[in-house]
Image (cartoon, rainbow, N blue to C red; front, top):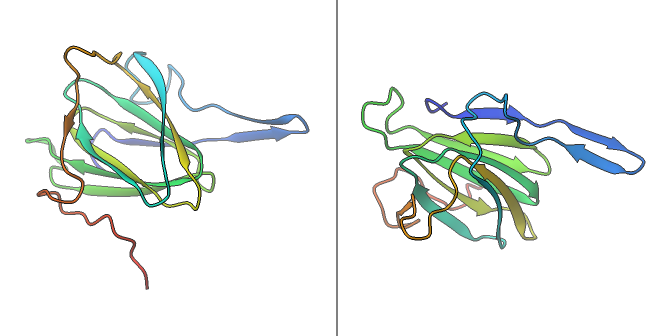
Length: 151
């Protein structure tokens, strides 16, 4: 596992009214502070990535559909520099992934319908000076191929 990344198995509590699932708590490992919560989606087969932050921690959960979430440690001096982690997250594997600053990440919708991500981040989005750097998802130096691996 990439240094500073935390994977928290989420507990779904169902009853006759529906279900409840806590995603992020202030006492979670890796939680620093609250910035904002946002929702993003991806259509089937769509890759969103790569990007990374200099200050922001992400706490990502997939609440509908399935995503392949991939992390790449590009932090110089990290004990896991150059390491890639791949997670299959969503309705069949409810987890919250904590992603520290400097860890490049992206995701691909692998379900037959749109997948929905809820991200609780440590910093509010700054429209004048965004803490986000982007890298092309397919043309880059990251040792990862987004294609499905059949066999």
